[in-house]
Figure (spheres, rainbow, N blue to C red):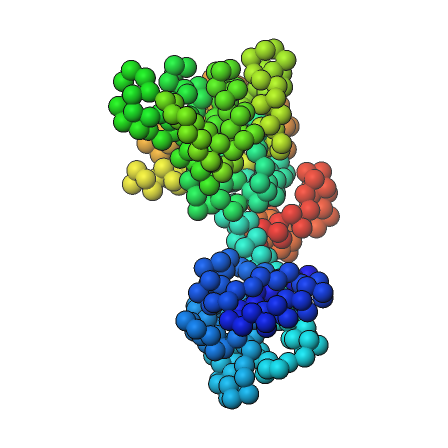
Length: 444
């Protein structure tokens, strides 16, 4: 239940009395003597109500109301008026004020008005949250493509973790999409409007690593011409993505740990501490704790980075996603290259489904682009019959079911008509592949 109230009144006695009444009733109260100060400290989606006098030096209560309406038309503003201001207050309600109280007013009348306004504000903010969640789900589904159960689980985990102020470690094979997942964790969280800075730890020579991470002052070392902002400082307020974190030199691991503990850093050649507020998302192929036990990674840093973990399944573990991903990559390549994207034939799809995809999604994207360029059919190099015919048929059947259910958003009658299946056979196949209608209703 919401209980935040901002009180704006130029009379100190009224502010004090209102604060006492509201605090004793369990409200969290902020006091301002000027409307300008209130606006300067008003957060977006403020979870409460504004209680304001009408006549004040500087901006009046009506001018405050107008500015609040411009920022958030659904934020309740209750006006405090003198006897002669009642007609003006009634007009203000037509302009968006939630209510008004005529001075002198009783504590009971004030509390009743505030509780009604807070109830309304709570419903509005909950509705916004649900709309934002639905919007995020839709956008995430278009970013992390797949109908497999593992991808549905991953999307739920990403949405949950995106909103939390914790460091995340992403485990996954080469080409499985670790940077894409890191980007989603940033884009769907509260830091989305701040920088997302990516750094591949394996791509930086050890002698340049500290300068790249922490920055340097002019003359800090030979060749250091001018001041340079490091990746940590540049990511202030946002997210730093450290790919292949297991390749970070041990000396720099110590310094990174200190930054995470103290939220401060020093540029090379400087003794001045700089405060930083950032979230670390790291990615690795090996297990960091195994690396720590082998003496190749600091155990204390490993624990700092693994507050939460995400595992990205390799493509061979979610073969039912291959047709959808391949279609997406061919369409994207065709639009970029100004070519036509030919549909997959049955034999071509069979070859895609039977491949083990050691390069994962990145390899699949390359094969799709080669097809659009006319450099051969979509057949990965070194393709092997990694599955039996029965296993390939099962994977293809599961894909067809999921694709039809996705297209028709869980409408069973439409799926039965398209696939020309009797209901009993369809139910048996759904049960065998672990599918339910509800899994596809959520995609709407």
